[in-house]
Image (cartoon, rainbow, N blue to C red; front, side):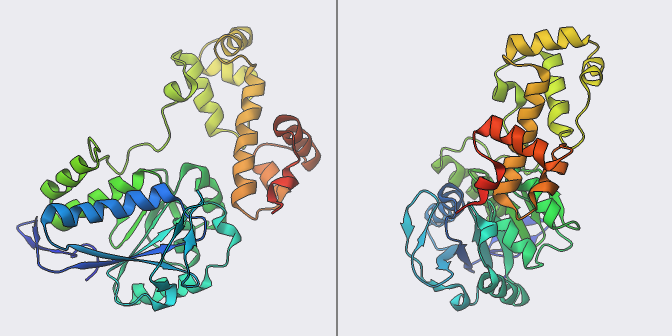
Length: 331
């Protein structure tokens, strides 16, 4: 019984609970995100509790069938290896840090088998990588944590990667990770068993509202930078959208109808650095995400972040982070 019909029948478009149990397998990748995993599994436990019966039956699986360690060092026991996970209605990949450095062939094979048998396939945090590599997101919308969006898109040109909090597209569901996993699972509970049960679960989680899929992942610039000046916020927003082809100081100033000198004063007053230094910081931080999360050549990363040469990129990176870009990939 795949998601979309799991635990419900339709009567006039309304969700009506059935007596069926949805069988869910959580596929844990080494160094998975504990907060994303917890946010995904707890709504299912609380749904069973609120309904006073088993709506969801869940189990945990790992690559070798032995315990799996989260990115925070907590070790979690599992039921067995990926290949032993059978008769699932949902398979959810729980990703985390360094997911691109591991071989996921066994997990991908298990996911493909589950998909062929009609299971819904989902992912939290960087688990979207595994689904994409397995070809299970072809023709579907997907999302991933904001840090990983550019790297995922660069590795999978044809993939429709959005920046939404989560995506539920037919029998595929992905989310940005963190607490967004709770919103995604609550939305699935709404679809399976109606809004009343989901609201009760959200109350138990002290989750004051179920966020919509299309809500932004990142904190608003105003909150992130601790500033409210509209022209300054507009320029920083432009910088974050144009790091691959940086705009000149004159262009940035003209975008908010200021002179270059006025723009300089604004940056120094509110951010303590020049526009050029802030722009460089944005580009270098984006480069660091790509270095850590992809196997892209350093020169390619340098060009994607607006640098004209590898030597210029390396020097700027060393000056900013105190270490060369090549050191980020040393295990």
